View 1: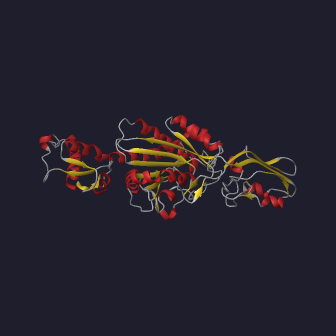
View 2: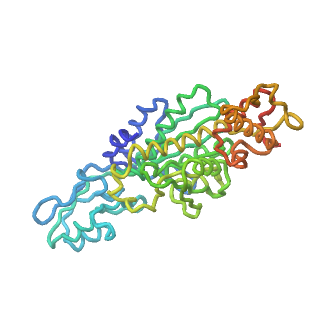
Length: 426
């Protein structure tokens, strides 16, 4: 995953354009079954429409001495996202109106965009900005804003059942590692693992979209089916560093996605940060909006907007690590594994069943027997609480154990005819 991020980091992505297509084509090599879709500019999507496509080829500023003081070739963040083209000579005072910097992080280049109002501009470290001298400056941005299309990737992995799990990540930020690339590379790794499963129970809808406008466009095309079939969903972003895990709830805060994230984090780490939907900021805004109401939540490391490097050039490849990516991958994989095995169970016998005659109860008080007693206690607890109204995660929460440890025991009891699986609570 870290190697993939290294390969993708130099690409100049935006909500449309060739950099985004190159990103999708790279990911398609890792997931050959993924399809890339193009939605023409001007296509309506609820209250929005697909904007003109933006591409930038060169962007620089030459100072009074004729030397370049800013160059897109040095860093993709140097140009204002969706900047209009410009080729002019301006004085320092006018130039300042088109520069963006961060006084609180004087060495960092900020990430600034102007998607829906045309303007030109450059982003610069505040330290460099303070060093600018009076004089003529040549400003040059070779960009195009013209009818084109919005690109997104989609991978549908069918299962035995029509119920779906959504994995959504975005591919629109240029040269940022945690806020951008950690999401696509972890999602790609999860997609490859899911593709390798020989017998999937659930269906997986995995999408790589430009943030906000991409999810809005996707929902405008698929909302009816997604509302009918989606049982849980995750926006995958900010999963590359090694900070404390974070959980951002869905608007309802009690969906299956919320429950499985909370369960996994409570059994995987000593503590984690909790955020409510009031602190939303990524594509959960669209998936959980009124009238859409999909069960979507977020499991992250450092939450977007909360870490100091966010939306700056300091969010580089040194901020993420193989260990950080792997930890997030494992946590999300555990969530998906539990969803695959999360069923509603009901005991089939009156009173406690006779486990001994089925070879499920130890007859010797040995150390191994003591260890097996834990399994016996777990099976007895499952039989005592499986009333046909709670799923496996709820039962494990009741027992205070990791639901992953309940899967094998529940399967054993189903095979012995002591538990039955229900499609709906009764």
